[in-house]
Length: 252
Length: 251
Image (cartoon, rainbow over all chains, first blue to last red; front, side, top):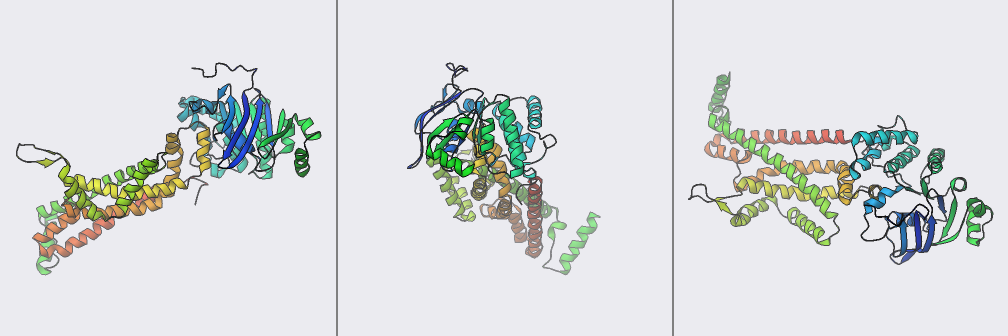
């Protein structure tokens, strides 16, 4: 029952074409297009309110769109007949505020979706969850509740929780913005390792150094449009658009 | 031993005519007290459980997309919260009772399929349930949207989000308010008296109608019985609250 018959890995795994999105009268995305190839890491940067988070929230249909098209592995995301579960199995998401389930331990947080949503067997899921927690360097914290973990640790549980669904793409929505400076690094390291393993990642971030280091491609958004994009070196060293230059001069 | 106790209370009744603990030495009266207490316990337990079920379902329905469903729930709450439970019991038994089908075990009698006990259970459960819906709703609203969104992003359906994420968290917030409402419910079961449900108050009144000298003792029994019953409810709710406590979360 493959509903992505037309997609092959040489085509963009995610493709946005002229996406428009409004909240009431406020148009947040004013025609955004971008393509992401399998295994690519792209970073979206830009001032607050430029529509970065909205953009990636549209990719897994947490937000709907008013016009344009978004496809994931060839499947139109905003097709009313879309099987949302199929989409969300493919696309994992990590949030700024971690959003762990506070009443479940770290291990349970990771295990819950494969058990309840995918109905996989417990022993198998548990083994995988333990491995994932080890992968994000949280051995020994399996039975801790989110409230007992630091922000950075919680965020790594959130990453493991998302990975437990075996997604093809990961969306990171300002995942270090709420963290203490000393825990930012451990989270970024985890993401870097994921990227190195070939996971397709879309990151909204304010960590410019990190973006430069891991991204294959940088997109700069401002007021609902993509102002400029390019490979990190070109983007950071030879930005063309005055708005990009101004933004970079303020934060670099 | 038992005979000695009986003798003691028989003499006490003779010496102090307003303190006739008749149920301590008359088997039939003793049986009335026991069966009244048992009926009260059953009413309380069944109504507590049903009112909790109604509360959870109602809170779930309040989150429904359909405005009609939400209007039905809020109409239900308005009706049951804003009218006296006493009147509700009368209404259910006498008004709705007229329309319930009957059956006949012997070809002569006509027995309604819902007895007065049945109506008391229905009426009291819906009464307390209305408050429980509101209590759970407050709890549901305390669960951050972002937590639900995380579940949505993981592929949970709306029902799964409600069952696995929203309700377990909402419940914890709701326990203190729930505690109050369930205590009230246990006490409100005495009002089933009005439709002749043979619970503890009803049996006590029958006893002191037969033995006016037993009125003081029966009132004493009533006070202690409810102190005990409500005490059990409060203790178990507190215990539940402790076992539900999450390390590092909330107060």
